[in-house]
Length: 189
Image (cartoon, rainbow, N blue to C red; front, side, top):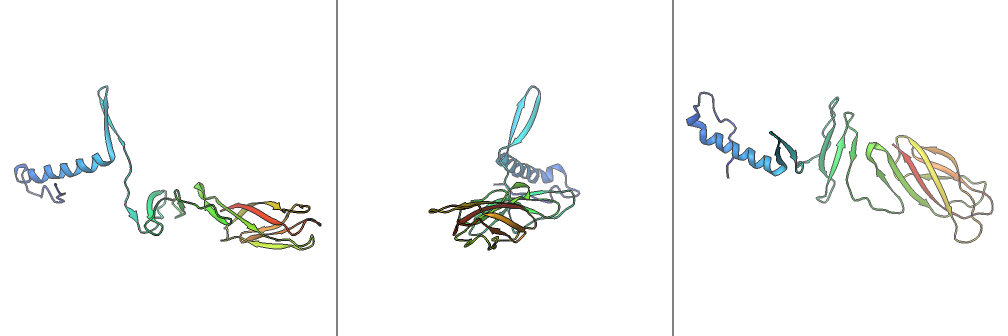
């Protein structure tokens, strides 16, 4: 197999002196090109398109560079490689991955939106008490929290959102409906 010869032709070489190296370089280029591209021909034109995009695994985030975004792969642990996008502000967004649906968790969506969800069991004991629920990890900004109450026996009340912050929210309910399990979903950045 041919190998790339960086300094061929060297300054002062004639074609006959460096012809073998130049041909070798074209073989290397053709092999690299053929791996990721295909040539389309027809109607007096030719063009190419990608069959695939092959990217080396990066050690970490690449940027930031003003006016430039990057798509790259990175090892997220245990030899698992995922696809990432990084914008000009060095905001890294994981585009692929195996997100497990657990009782409590979070996922970062395209565009930087983060969705978190969870369950607080037997959260409310009476209608006068206010209870704090802490997110698994804080948001920069929390835009919305939705609550659903669940009680297997007796009267179910409506959990009421009292306050929201980047680290969690406060909730209380109506009399005669306790204890209750509260399922929640929060959206933010």
